[in-house]
Image 1 (tube, rainbow, N blue to C red):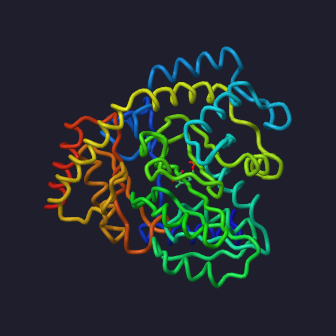
Image 2 (image 1 turned 90 degrees about the horizontal axis):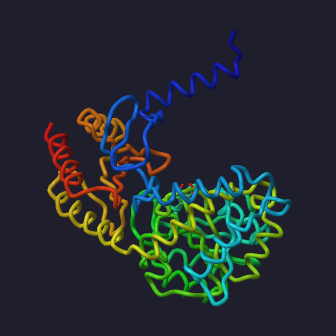
Image 3 (image 1 turned 120 degrees about the horizontal axis):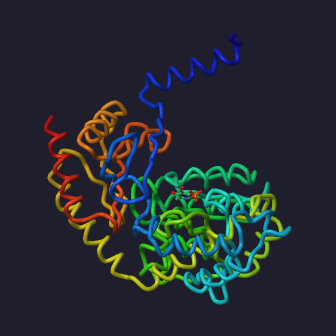
Length: 390
Ligand SMILES: Cc1ncc(COP(=O)(O)O)c(C=O)c1O
């Protein structure tokens, strides 16, 4: 049986497929790493955000196992009811000290970066306020702005003249500038010092989403440290499922900001705490982020090697000093063709299409990891060169 509502969905799905926009999941059946067993094949992958190669590190696995033995596998409740464990508490203190966005900062854990961004923006802004966001910000910062009911002003990517003008014209009671620190699909770094100057000049909050910088840039402390920035205006959001190799996120900020989130942010208050065993794994991960700078050195050497080779490919590689190295192809169908051709050669490089990126800028989002070897990078370059000629 069908209904008009089902017919509408089926039609919309068919239109997506016809436009080359259908998304498809592949199923991984091995530990995270440079090589994966996927859909019954062994492939070399360049599509995860496990930048330091920690997601399957035996030390993290052992820490998670000890955490499970000590605390069980579920938190049982939200943090404010009965789900806040000593492992969460200890990890929050360590993260606040490590990132230190301002003097005496506190940190608050979230189950995902998505929830953390919703919490920050909705707790700090409401109807009479304005949120200013870079056009290439991650979708969850945009969703957070919409959910807050504040006026949402988007500025062209990196266009601080436009942002400055919008801030000056705004009559909003409270202002909040939100930016990815490392843009997730382009890999470039936001001009944080200039953004902080604008926040100071216009008495605005500055939300820095460092999902892709934490653990990698600033000797692992993240993008604020890369620029040597600290301020009471900064609200730092770092995710823990990318370079940190586990799951979750945290906000680090002035204690008054953190306490406000804890008391009022709905995506903090009304959700079950993440399993404490993950906090145990994350304490181990943070120890490695602090203690093994050689992982970042290796990653940056691989980035240099990739960029040197990619300059000879027929596609444009965006300027990026981070592990995110996007290769712009343009059309959806051609992007899928290249991604499929690489897959046929045993390489998994995901095709990224609108709405994740602007129309006409479909791309291969190549991500590098300390888990890769030089030979892996050379294999990718050789396969891309072959596919580029075909
Ligand atoms: C820039 C950015 N912010 C936030 C998120 C959301 O983090 P999470 O995956 O932990 O929800 C992501 C990616 O997932 C991201 O790339």
